[in-house]
Length: 174
Image (cartoon, rainbow, N blue to C red):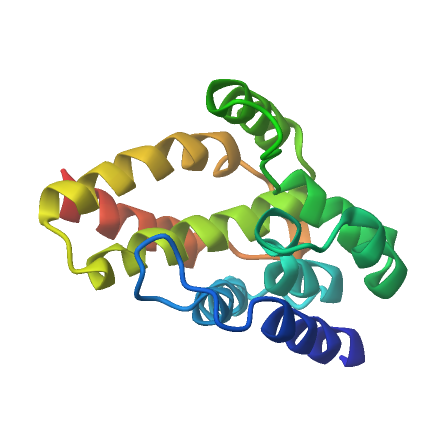
């Protein structure tokens, strides 16, 4: 449990003052939503929950893989890096590499991504934009959902809540 508290505090410090792309939601509240979603999926594995707190740190802060590995271990760092877009690449290449990384990522990484996608789509209305924009966000995240939602989590999680939540979002945006 200590690692989870440390991961939460590390993420809070690293993302201090950061807002999401919508300009309204704090990055930290997004991370809270991701971890809440993991808990709704009955995830108790500490590596997965730590990665939920840390999944945006490499992409959105000056944190690198080695910093995560040194502080939280290789297993957590491997999950986080597999959920990180390589911002050094041009956008088209970055998206292609990210899609490949998601498709081949571990079960643990896919569970974090499922929680992340649901948090992102559920947060879209908070941007204060129009329903068309929200639907675009849903369509964009649907692609990622297709890469990770067929995961067989074994005893790591129960996906019934997440799949029901996705069905509600599909109805809302169809």
